[in-house]
Image (cartoon, rainbow, N blue to C red):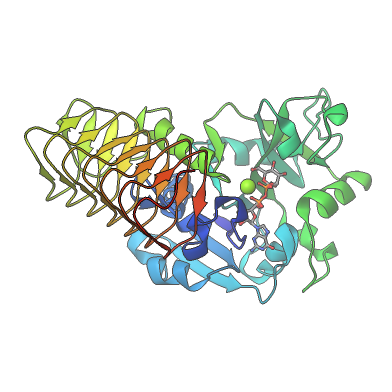
Amino acid sequence: MIGAMLVGGFGTRLRPLTITTPKPMLPLVNTPFLEIELMHLKEHGVDEVVLSTGYLPAVFDEYFGDGSALGMRIVYVTEDKPLGTCGAIKNVERHLGDGPVIICNGDILTDLDIGALVEFHRSRGATVTITLTPVEDPTAYGLVPLDDEGRIKEFLEKPTWDQVVTNLINAGTYVMDPAVLEQVPPDTEYSFERQLFPDLLARGAPMYGFPSDAYWLDLGTPQKYLSAHHDILAGHIKVPLKGNEVAEGVIAGEGCDIDGSALLRGPSLLGDRAAIGPGARVGTSTCLGNGVTLRAGARVDGSVIMDGADIGEDAAVEGSIIGRNTTLGPGVRVADGSVLGDNIRAGGDNEFLKGIRVWPSTDIEAGKIKF
Ligand code: GDD
Ligand code: MG
């Protein structure tokens, strides 16, 4: 089966991490997030995927090539300018064949049973079937009220609270008859959520909702990015972790150097060649990338530390994200969902608190920031 995935967005809410890496290529438990999504598609028989890229397109191609390493066929189509969700799929129409296709937003972590979704779509004779998931606050999503037969009554993108009549929202995975794209203008910015779906409904096309209680998370913000790590490490969704168990619930990759006096608490993951110094502590729900160093007495808790980062003596990182090759001097503190981009050099005793975000490649003198 053929799938198309939208991976062209700027990932604005995940800046500064997405200044250097497009959102779908950010590491999730030390694997590019998109690789996890592609393996999920493949498991369900979707082995030909068209990636609709726009922002930092080369990063995708460099990593996945033609897809053969994953046992898939991957094709890339890059937009000159953002065409919107539907315009982007119109732009890859020539690769979609004429059977029903799977369309995915590129920022969703899920273990959805795609086979069951396709089966549902066929059995209803639907034009489009939209997977739905329950959420507490539907106002950040597309609201999808259904009638008693499961037919979609309305599609309300980013509704206001007074429009909220259900907790079911668009989960960002569709099955679609590609013929619906005939009515979409080429090379024009066009939205599924605000244009095509409301349009099809107005014309009476059979559109169905497929409510699902599968694991579901939109990885759009630093908090969600951390939650995705915590959920995978806690086993709420099955994603393979690379390495062997070195302590209860602690998985470590190859070539790690862990001092005998270091404290490791699971569930947590250490990448290849992680170096954990004397008295350093890896707390629960922590993910260290490949080649990460924790110097003597450093503590990391509930955080994501990306490849090559170096956490100084007695430094502490709590519930935060540290980008690739960033260096923290001695005694630095990072907490409260703060995000430091790639290649930052922060001298000793700086404090990055209250969700502060620091641009990549910034050099900060010792003791400069108490935020
Ligand atoms: N190629 C391309 N071109 N991709 C795009 C473009 C574009 O112009 N605009 C957005 N995308 C991609 C993003 O990279 C992302 O993977 C996906 O389309 C959805 O865009 P978001 O910006 O993440 O949208 P959202 O999260 O606010 O809302 C969407 O997803 C929700 C579920 O997470 C909507 O589909 C909502 O209805 C839905 O509930
Ligand atoms: Mg999103």
